Length: 451
Image 1 (cartoon, rainbow, N blue to C red):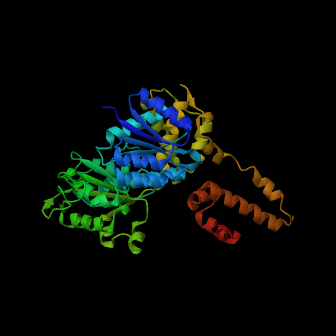
Image 2 (cartoon, rainbow, N blue to C red):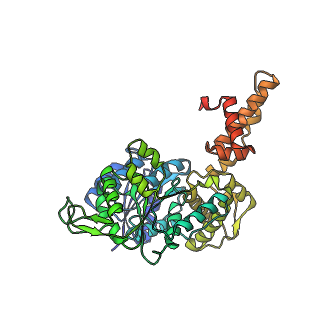
């Protein structure tokens, strides 16, 4: 039976492009130019995958994504976005989107993601398997890997904190692969992708008739992972009631299916991850403090990619090789100009964004090198030198040297902060000063008061 794909975009050219391409590939396509009719359709008929634009005329794509996740949590959603909306795309990943693609679209690239989403959605609770682990060579990454390998042979619960797309699942799989449970299952669950009202059922299972739609008994992810490792990504999204059940499962090593009172013994090693500060969430009353301490027997802090400059080209080379295999290409490497652009960019979407950029660039490139023309325009814009700095300094009304020096310093510090996405450590490195000196400069120049 042909797989059903919903395509939602108000750009008729894109709709026709995707409809014609996927029909040739043997898919059944249903298209919509507005979000609400697509939502009504999904209430009546199932879909195997959804392709949805972030900007729609009647409803924001991110809001629509939330409705899709509630209505059909097992259906993977791929968001389409202009590259300038990369932060919105990252928010969609946090909210449970399987992946995002940037415009202009390349159907072959989307086809690979579609196949990956459809084939792997049942294997890992909606999350695809992590790719081969690449260590990198930055001091922070080497230290983190050393700590991960140190804790791996134990049964301690590990909490990994880091931004979305930074590679938390890579680290979780590394821990599992160096543990005594490595021959058993590794089950990864994206807690942010499961509607809160269904989380207990997905994690612990349910019995027939326990709620509307429970037409048969179902085992949960904890039973599936019995003997192995369960990875709970974005764990801060769990409701208070589910947190209580999870705490009991950790304390007593038993679970209870929804609608049942019979305890089921489970033996799982828990690795969890969050893109927010869970301790602060506990202090604010949004996360149970006792559960936080149970999960945090050993904590690993994963730095964002922008703070691991030495690793960027290592990961880029890995993704190049991976993209060559997936796209049937033979691109040899990157031009020196591309190396410079990749290392200068702040990568707000972390490894996920880097992987997408490299795959797109490999698709566009010939059989030689990825050149500057293959990169998205928005990355190139960020890397362009600010030609207005000199003009801003020379246009000062006063020629007072002391004031001019202060204003020049202020402009340069602001540019560095902007380039570093307001990351003070990275901005200090760009300015070739230490972090303490940067904080002093920010205070002296009155920059924070203007933010």
